[in-house]
Image (cartoon, rainbow, N blue to C red; front, side, top):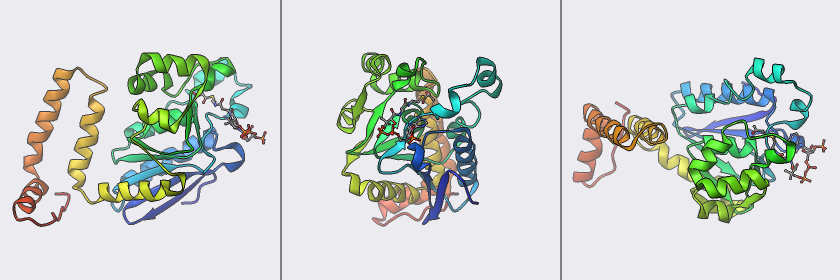
Length: 258
Ligand code: CAA
């Protein structure tokens, strides 16, 4: 399928979704968010795809929601269309893992989009920020909630109240990103991580994603029980038998997603 604001390639079980509005530093307009929702749903439903990478350009992952598109809207407009509701939430409905490969600016909605991915690999050029305060507004795609869970109250308040940008190094130090790599190696590192994920049992992969995400939604006690029951349920799969047998027989497992 051809998109106006995305480039989508599927290669070796990996769907690479590249945000593609270079003239606007990949600002998230309604077309892009709608197309992204469609591309994610289609990758999730495609049996060939086992992992998704979301990326932008060298200069910008995404510089936020599209300010030109938003500037003249009224409360009634944004409330009626539920701006940043349904389409953005497709990120959360996607069951396969999504890696954010971030180079350059990830600001406002761009930072929030990266945080909705399962983990973030950052180029050493990446800059993260929630500068909505400079526009006289507050974050609207989850920044105040997710950044606070990632980095704690003090740094989240600092970022949201001052609108300052964080370097990749600071982002790694405070747990916002999983690793920082030289900009030139960003896509190789993201592909290598996605390839590793694609080799696992898809059943275990989906279970891991559900269990880790549950930790954000529930108490520790309920989360531990959820994890334990999921672990028990894996013993109903052939992949558990294969994975453990392969270990004991000192060979590579051949997972069949069964
Ligand atoms: N929306 C629309 N257009 C944007 C944009 C955005 N968020 N960010 C950049 N652009 C456009 C610029 O208007 C410019 O277009 P023109 O050439 O037509 O004027 C083009 O992209 C290049 O941008 P700059 O000339 O500004 O590039 P720069 O290198 O000088 O600065 C930048 C880069 C620091 C990222 C700067 O563009 C910037 O501050 N952008 C806005 C960042 C921002 O405020 N993001 C939050 C948006 S609100 C939001 O996201 C709400 C939410 O929570 C969902």
